[in-house]
Image (cartoon, rainbow, N blue to C red):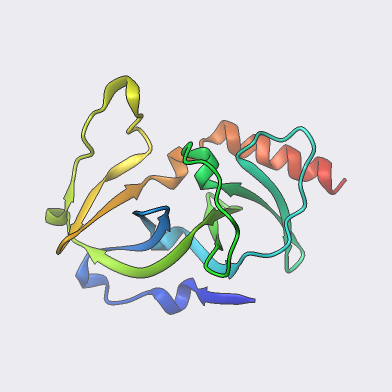
Amino acid sequence: MSLISADKLGGDENLGQEYLIFTLGNEEYGIEILKVQEIRGYDRVTRIPNAPDFITGVTNLRGVIVPIVDLRVKFNLGTHEIDSDTVIIVLNLNDRVVGIVVDGVSDVVSLNVDQIKPAPDFSATLSTKYLLGLGLLNERMLILVDIEKLLNSEEMELLEKLTEVAYA
């Protein structure tokens, strides 16, 4: 069951870049809305043997086998009980479909260039290479994630190979 479809999330292009806001723990993150194919409730995921910890498994989305990445594990945030707020955001990244598990989604916001600040450099303690910056919206600070860099091509190839092996 699809909760939100990306074509329903679009808005006035003159407002700036739009981001889908999701939560992991107490923090709010944003990804470019144009990368989002749909948002689904957490469904059954088939675990793949020998897959890295951050790959939860795969799911069948209308005949397409979609690898699922748990962002909590990818960001080293520990585990979280799957509950009714847990969702899978289905992304289309360079013609590859991948799902990411997040604690919940809240809204879609539009940020202009003035509202996006560079991510601070934490050097060795935290890599900022996956961040587009910090979005400032009233009293909210949003961590804007470059989802394509986060799921780099090497990992995407691994996801593809695991999906092929699982359904060969």
